[in-house]
Length: 415
Image (cartoon, rainbow, N blue to C red; front, side, top):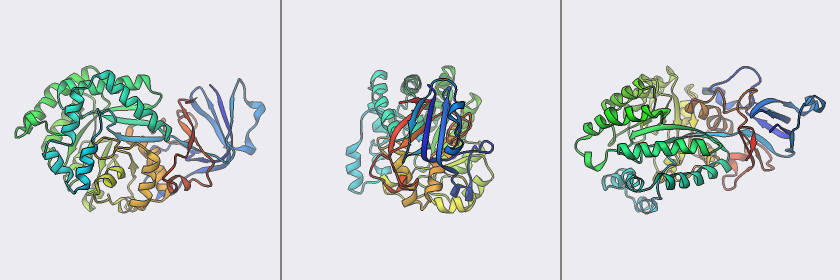
């Protein structure tokens, strides 16, 4: 389907000169837009865009679906680079425990948290997991997400980790979203390996990774490198094993303490290090010398009532920032990236421009897809959304209580 969107009030995050893979530091405060614009989509890709006064209708060959976007804006779809949206059931009882003051770590020690989700998932069929996840995928799509990374990690056995990754493979086939799969066997230590954590690490390295690689089930490998979870030594062993099988690292790091996870991520050229509530001068200095994307998850910090990552300090030091939802049943049960935009502005003191760049092009970078997604550029995949009538792009994070997406276009098709 060829599409012409005309009379766009403002076209957001355009690239007129060269391909931008990520935006860093002070540049994040700059948002390139075109007012009173048009956008042409052909063959599933962005073909042309510009000011309406430069649109020549007679030059359009073939049939076009014409959309009049008067009063509306067009954004590149959000790229959510960190989720756990394949899971079985919810964990609202633990939510009540958190309200009563029980910590995330104490819930985990009691066998709750990730281990609770693992028990549920191990007894849930692939078919049911696919059905549950598709509902969540269409929910986030309707809030503007066009690309999403999904992690395993609620299996914690070879069989169940493989099951999760096969579910993600099925979702790639069934959903119009761009999906990346990440193997996160090192999400928690199963009950049967408590006190023998190295044996579980051996299982991940010697059994899980080779089987996952043999079926080509994962794009990336991840480790929860933090206090009470996996050590630096565990992390490095797992990452090296994954890299031998072609899996680039992504790391859960420094959510609970200064764990050394950020430094480990940079050492092994991780695509991203995520959470980062505990990020100091040493961590910032390390990241500045790397190609690793710092990714913040305000939904988890909000839901767990944790300290906020020092986003302002990181950006002012010259770092890029990506934002993701961390959609999961225990610490961030929402994949609404419009809400993440609002949280970034309110909790992290990011400007709307910085936050929009963080959920689009920088989020795409943290998924390894910024060459094809994350901005309005000729030749990129046509993943965009048209807003409801809104007064300005600042209204997107400002109005946190309503859905501002009216029309979703993915792969050049109206959904």
